[in-house]
Length: 150
Image (cartoon, rainbow, N blue to C red):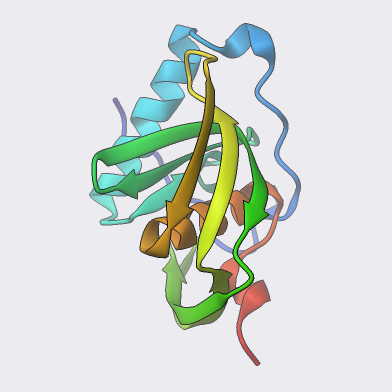
């Protein structure tokens, strides 16, 4: 594992849609190393989530901390969400020192792949759902500051 440099606002990789993880990458040492590096980098920065674009890698992979520890998701898709939103303060490792009130869905339905390629389908609620939305935004080139409640 290695701690990677977190890229900050202004780096173009943060503003483009990340590429899908290709099928042949699942189960490889390279993808496992990327995930290990993301976890190590997130922990070293005291974060609760981190996406591959935040370390300069334009792939649709992110880590989100859950009550059971870090979860790695590849090619995630939010397939449904609650009607209700909750507005709470967010910050971001790629936008250091800035915080703001961001509305997010209270719960989500998510489909993704694990790093071994197996299919995942689950419901997320509360803070975990917020982290998933924040990290998924990174994969689409969106930063939390773009969603600040005016």
